[in-house]
Length: 185
Ligand SMILES: [Ca+2]
Ligand SMILES: [Ca+2]
Image (tube, rainbow, N blue to C red; front, side, top):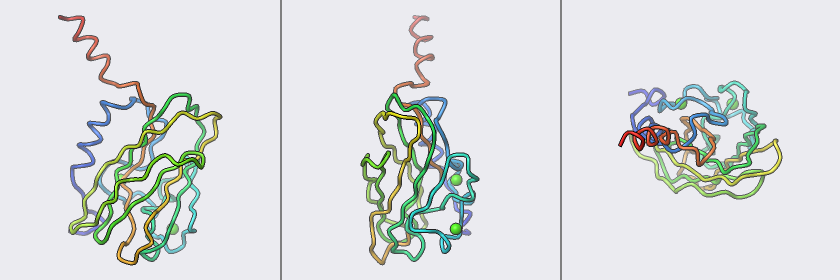
């Protein structure tokens, strides 16, 4: 199977679960949750160490992974967007550590540390996994969510991105169903 077309069902299943936990109206989504990085910028060799992406830019300008240039680069992506973040949000990312070595990245909002991803080890075949991060509320309307590769070891080849999403927290879409159920009993 061509690795560029590799796909599976884990991310889609987890995304379905997350759809019941997060708002039905995400603040933004980058890429498609389809267990593939094909929609992104597939050539990392011309990318800067700090890549800038603004929500609304074409997906094929978003790096398909972190730390992919030479397999050991400490790379960063700044995702810039305008939004009111007066309530906490949840950042969901479906990603893969690829086929070789451990990978990990950190998440920041407006330069403030949010969380580290789990450290995941590449496998053959590669596996996709979804991680979520609780993002605190923030003032202002211009924001930047930063992903930064943490490992600079020589054995990893960087991460792969399937899709990324930011959505408001505490507005679960299953609530109306529950309310209807409650009223019926
Ligand atoms: Ca590129
Ligand atoms: Ca994808």
